[in-house]
Image (tube, rainbow, N blue to C red; front, side, top):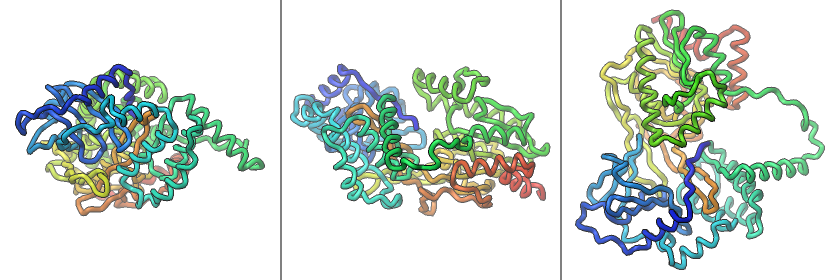
Length: 491
């Protein structure tokens, strides 16, 4: 899981809080954006003054700045209507309502601010900030069978003023892993995580000192990128591979298109060599992301440019197989850009809403855009337990498209965008705060989007990948691809 770096210098922090400390701006009529605004859900406030904005994450006990700049950078995506600010970001629309003033904890020289400033590295305070965020914004306590009161009562006493950084990270990690939610995680400096791992290993050695399996050489672990490459090698050996194998395509049996999409990101053309190893390629890509102004626009431009070539190459096919079984996600807009090439009629395909206290934000209806010249022949979308996050958004959208048939097994079941947050001590964490639903109001969180044709994949990653590899090695073929071909051939 990747979290944006939001560290700020002491000068910027002071500047931020000093501005929030100023008296409220006198509103020059209801049409001005000047003032202090609170988000509906998502735990944020923003102050706008003469075209400049300051944005902070807030809880009842914390206020941490995350962004500042000129509102012109949002262009026409930031709108004011009926005293409500709306900000469009990809498929999302965030709403802000005007409030009289910023919370006291955001304002320098107040007792609340000074008290919080003194506790930025206090283990107990950081636990409370993390817990306040989960309590107010996590959407799936009941679904994930987590009793928040019992969890708090279990973990809070483990943290004291004397808790070390390694111990605190160990406690946080243990607590968050118990949710069994792929969109929950926490990051700390490498030295802290290393020390926490050593602490974990020492505890394991104490608990299982005579473990007979300890020290035994385990079977080599398969990775999604390894298996996807083997599938492509078997079925489209003469195909086209770009973006370090992130996109692969070619023809099966001379008249069936096959397109493999292995991440919903990494599509931007940053001039990174395709000859690099998988690890080196992604390291170079993430380094580049630190230097660009708008990675979202770069990703969309990259996938659109690639799709221009791909759809031209596969235009003569009588059917198209799109394989996203090895795709762990990325940006929702990338998958929906692919679906646009298959869709002739713009339509609402799902809804989403964010957790807000005991309720939810207003429902956001998400529209699948359409192409003037869509590929309207049969499409077979291959999905499985490793299809996650943004890939599931694609699968969810595809449920509303009549020419798409899903083959495989249920997707992972993690839909919500990750709500990124930073603790006072600088550690970064994320959680699921959104509920995605199909047009009948069904949520597939923790369940996954189902296939139309079930292959019977195991949920365990290694069992799933080994099933595919074993089939390839035995020359019996990939079950999902062969099923698609079986359906296509009579046509």
